[in-house]
Amino acid sequence: MSVIDWRQAASNLNLRKQAFIGGKFVDAVSGGVFDAINPANGTTLAQIASCDAADVDLAVHSARKAFDAGSWSRRSPTERKKVLQRFADLMHQHGDELALLETLNMGKPISDARSVDVPASANTIAWYAEAIDKIYDEIAPTGSGALGMITREPVGVVAAVVPWNFPLLMACWKLGPALAAGNSVILKPAEQSPLSAIRLAELAAEAGIPDGVFNVVTGLGETAGKALGLHMDVDAVTFTGSTEVGKLFMNYSAQSNMKRVALECGGKTPHIVMADCGNLDEAATAAAYGIFFNQGEVCNAGSRLLVDAKIKDKFLDKVIAVGKTLTVGDPLDAATKLGAMVSQVQMDRVLDYIDIGSKEGAELKSGGKRVLSETGGYYIEPTVFDNVSNKMRIAQEEIFGPVLATISFSGAEEAVALANDTIYGLAAAVWTDNIDVALSTARRLRAGSVWVNNFDESNITMPFGGYKQSGFGRDKSLHAIDKYTELKATWIKIRA
Image (cartoon, rainbow, N blue to C red; front, side, top):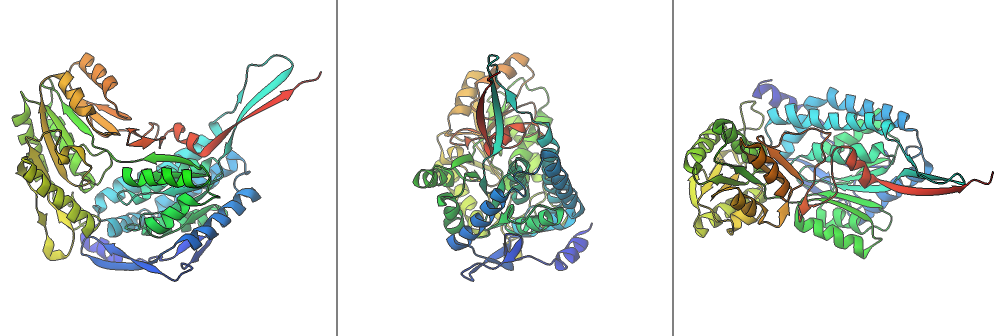
């Protein structure tokens, strides 16, 4: 589709603006609203229901009622599977619409939304649909006088609080395993990007998910999000976002009912290139896309480029050259590779970090400016710093924008030490042609995901999550089911 086609399709969208509670679209109890902004031009797309504690109470009551009634929680795995498969099919059928909602509300290129976000989201739901009737319980090794059963049960009411960088995909990473396991879910999308979540609830209902099993509460983090974290009848919170907010949810749990908390938080991924890397062009392309994809608004973005001093200058020139080929422009143009930052607040934050980097003494090699300001949108060009110290703020703090900090090292030992010198531990990557160096480095990197001779390649079968202040718990794979189930031990005495 051309940019004209996408604009026409966008003009024909009927945007849902309300929360979805108990199978119905509803206004906020207070009547309050907030603006959903199009970051490509700064205009208001819609006014969305601004939910708070009163609305959260309604959603939790609806979710608990549905859970206790067993319309979903006690339905057989095979039956839940069929409904979730229909849900995934509907997402594929409405792929253009969902992609548009992502692009309009978040600013990502439509080519990425349509080819990456939507298919991955629908496939996540489908994968967990297929998985749930293939997970077996256990029989303990007892003597002949007893039977010990170890069974999984849904945890209950799950609050899923998701970020604005991949609104649809992050929601589905939570919804897939939580719904497959039989839970009731309350989804709280980020206030910057609520549109796809609201539409998702409508598709879920059309697929046959019972009323109250999947609710969407739109609102601000400090109101709706906090209310979910403190609610005494929420059994678990799963959160993806900043480390700062993740710590708040841990506090909310302690202040309330000790609800289970799973966190996927910030990152400062080291992207290591050893001197013996045999394909510098491939590695340079991966390094550029690793930080500039999705405007750098990626929790595991390769924001620290660690390069052996022997090849650093040559390699960095290649990375910069790739970055210059990435078109910054209208997210609805299929040729665009970098869209708009999600908000003016985020754009200003990234520009502040660029200024901080220069003041700290790093060398700005490429980019560093806001562009296309005449559109009213929030665009920043790909930015590369050289001669960065790992102690600088741009090397230690999560920027969440298209800003690359280049750090040189001498040998694998220093590379690993620099890589691990961070409060985060979400992901890491290493490029080398030496299998011993690859394996030893991967083992010593304190990160939940490590890529060797690639960056950010994976699929739904691999767990995703972090070490240290990147959080705990895992999304994706069968391991995600652990977050949404309780283990019950049942000991039966055999009298005969």
